[in-house]
Amino acid sequence: MVERYARDEMKSKWTQQAKYDAWLKVELAAVKAWNKLGLITDDDCEKIQKNAKFDVAQIDEIEKTTKHDVIAFLTSLSKSLGDESRFVHYGMTSSDCIDTANALQIIDSMDLILSDVKELKKAIKTRAFEHKSTLMVGRSHGIHGEPITFGLVLAIWYDEINRALDLLKHAKSTISTGKISGAMGNFAHAPLELENLVCEYLGLNPAPASNQIIQRDRYAQVITAIAMLASSCEKIAIALRHYQRTEVYETEEYFSPGQKGSSAMPHKRNPVLSENITGLCRVLRSYVTPAMENVALWHERDISHSSVERFILPDAFITADFMLARLTSLIKNLVIYPQNMMKNLNLTGGLVFSGRVLLELPKRGISRENAYKIVQTNAMKVWADLSEGKSALDENGNSLFLQYLLNDSDLRAKLSDDEIKACFDYSYYTKNVDAIFERVFKGVDE
Image: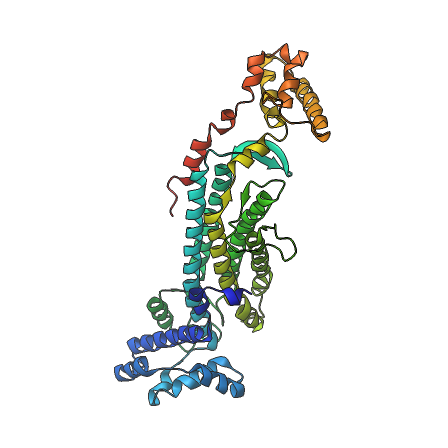
């Protein structure tokens, strides 16, 4: 499914053409380095740099016989050259080419993902400031807790995505590593200077030590960083799915003209985008286990990692790119219903203010245990009324909870009517929103 809808720029990073282009970059960098070290003449180096070409269809055909893709690639390459082709891949092993080229592909793909994440951050930030003061109910265990703002919800998402961005940047740094150290990593056939030069030409760091491969903990860090990002994105998607439930209906995915929700029920407007994102994030996390298992290879290496990476590297980047674009669009176009948020905030007849009332009583000399008993006793009366279908507010807009508190003699012995009513002030819960936003957004690199 993702392949069908994959965005062209990311998809192009993982074609066969792109893979062999990266291999060619490595091989040409090695030729250039050998030339500088004196093995290859300027004339031969120039011929190779100018004329070396490959043909994907030809490589596929050669590989039917060789059963070895690097040899097939080098054979195709040699057909575009003369005698100078003897210096292509000189002193190298297949993984010198493959792993160093993999780094180039991953870096290019990671740059796109980093750009995607920054766009997601911008979308979340815009909506956060738009709804910084939009009141809604906070929930724990899915049950109404205390008043918050929708802007605070978005600020938490922004902060978490920013941490995911830091992980991705670190993973990019970790994977920006090449090796030209030979079949066992001992530089028997090529000097360390060759590796240093090749990595310098390609913008990579030479691995401090390697065997036949770049160690796969580096790859595991990349996949894990993507999986962590996916977990945070799924968190957002699940919240939006909840907010769109009919009983909640505080936000809704944009429903475009002509869009259909159900073949049987014409009224349906479903959270299909966030459900799709949830599923894609599950897939992305599933790549962590094989990436981790690739770390433990036999001795200087086996080839069990290769088949895994042929799947998880392109799929992880293509899927993540698609998912991030979808989530960013969802956030940008999200329809938000402040009136429904306020309606839900009043749904429990003022019970969201119970914590505030509780905290006032110890100030008046009442033990916490007795204070809790006073407040909870009245709260339970409200739950009983609500369960019988009684309105949460009276005709004057006063909440059930407030009415019970004003009629509680033990409470009124400690608090006046005005003091009790003051506990039902929403501004008490939003007084630090500006300060929180300052901490979350100030100085953050976009």
